[in-house]
Image (cartoon, rainbow, N blue to C red):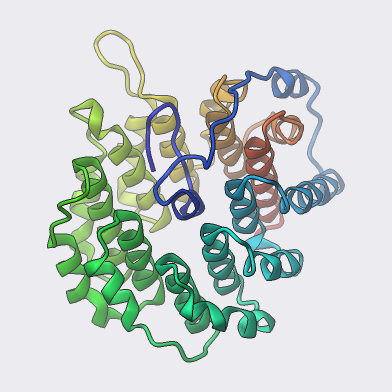
Length: 355
């Protein structure tokens, strides 16, 4: 995850790019369509939400064959909440020529527990890509099938690439085996001489997340500390820490996340859009669904990835214009924004249905 001009928000981004960011930069076009749509918002009843959900799924299905592997990967992530619609797209993703897409497809199979795709995942245990192997091990074990987890230790401790280590660490945390805690402590302490300082900081936060998922509550301390930004190069660390605290459900972080979202320095400057949106998204996952006003500020931002991040926040929060905003963003000229808007619609529909 990088805050350069934009912040990439998903594991998919890291897997496809071998780090964060897009597989190719497109022109960054501002859009005014979502703002126009919001003026005519009407109550979002069950019929309207159901119709919008079907439009979102149709958008994702269309973009599942996009030329950009990042878009294909994000489609897979978005459809995890709709397993029946995900299955044929995941089956194709497991055969994708891009290793990042294969990795995300296997991860999606495990998350959605698509048992009928187990035979298609199994060959990926021998894939030449460590990222794909990691996802395949995760998927097989989530499906209740045999898969040797020992490569995860090798990747977490020995691979020179922080993105590979981070993905292995993520899988260890998700699989829930507390016996992995000593290995994770070693991974946090192990030097990465070929990585930059920023990559090392992010990697260590991801190790803290995995350890926290395995019951080591002491890891909350470095995550909370990372929310307090003292230097510009720590902004991306703060954004990642916010995301993690929301993901693990740490309600004690709510005051600090609120401060991150609304903070102004002595000159009146706020945090960058990506950091504020990360905080708003984390607060939403912690049950504080009133952060739509932050997404509202960025719905027509010049950067597609900021608009995409705003779409995700609209899907997770409550606000009078959320549905109209998502409808407008589904028509955005940038494919990445349309995928994020479709994912936001699916999240909004799930929440509206009480799930």
